[in-house]
Amino acid sequence: MSALDETLLADGDALAAADAGGVLRALASSGAQVREAIDLSAEGGVARLADDERPRAVVIAALAGSSVVADVVQALAGRGCPVPVVVRHGGPLPSWVGPLDLVVAVSLSGRAPGPLALAVEASRRGARVVTVAGEGSPLAEVGARHGNVQVVPARGVRADGGDPRSSRVALWSLATPVLLACDALGLLTASAADLAGVADRLDAEAEASRPWSETFVNPAKNLALELSGAVPVLLADGDLTAAAARRAAAMFARTARVPAVSGALPDDASEVVATFGGPFATGSDPDVDPVFADPFLDGPAGPRLRLVVLRDAPTAVSDEDRRLADAVTTTAADAGVRVSELVADAGTPAQRLAQLIARTDFAAAYLALASGVDPARSPQVADLKDRIG
Image (cartoon, rainbow, N blue to C red; front, side):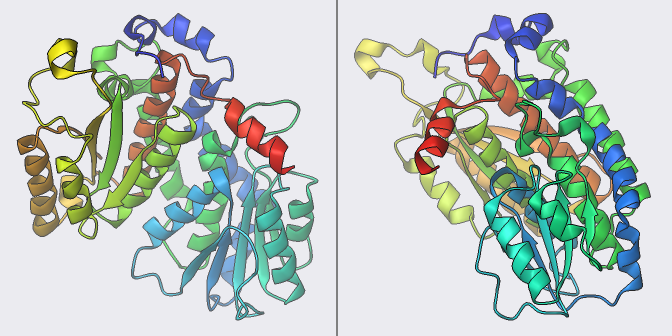
């Protein structure tokens, strides 16, 4: 990856021109995706799920960029969810799934083989099926069968007609109907009114991270600058922020081509801290910028570790969890590892999660553009798809 072009990052018009695939524009539409998806969910009859008995278990079938929908559902349902929520990317469907269960299959195109096969098998076994899939697609046909529910993704982010955008930037078009379905079943709290607040939070984040905003006041551009030449380690301070950390790792890899790993406290504390003594740690004073190192005396500069801590709103975190997160960041500083912290503003769990996801989504797009990378298309991914047919 080439060095970060800070002049491009500071020029909104140049950024818009470089973003030929419209990734920034699609991310900025996230709030609109939520609002349109609420209406489309009503048209699809999601609310009638409330008339049925609560399922014994829920299976969410999603693949690749759509799989973050399952992370969002599990994060918002929490450990107190009244029924198990199981995630599958492909077959086979668990043998225990039957008429007492619900299968939710998500695919922007409606043609992803894994979710389609799981939905077909679930319908054959008599399980209720909810699909979020492109209109007229094979998966949509399964959802349109008697007793099932089918919702068309928000029309602004369709992946047809040559539209290069993908499920990576259509998250809220796909997640909103699923959240409304889970709310109707009493698995989590995500009513239309709740999600309207999520849309407002996404709009606010898009405004703060817009291309024409000065870099020094733009949180996403600032994060992109901090991650220039770095290997990001994303660490969440709890279950809710863990979903945002996994999403961020995927977006940095797929959109900015930067390998990233994610973890969550308390389970991953020791694994993350152990890396502070490894080959990617600076091993020097974090206040000394590596650009001033002498390449003849110190050798060529390599990629350095950057700890990115995703924190929930202060009022939502226990004292114990806060102390652990503080201890990790202090250990990083002592080891010469630089730290970036993202803290969610107060609000509902869905709003807090949406804010952190939006912040890192925009940062990944800016990191790609300022590095000379097309955030919408990857030749290597295209080659892989050609090779596997």
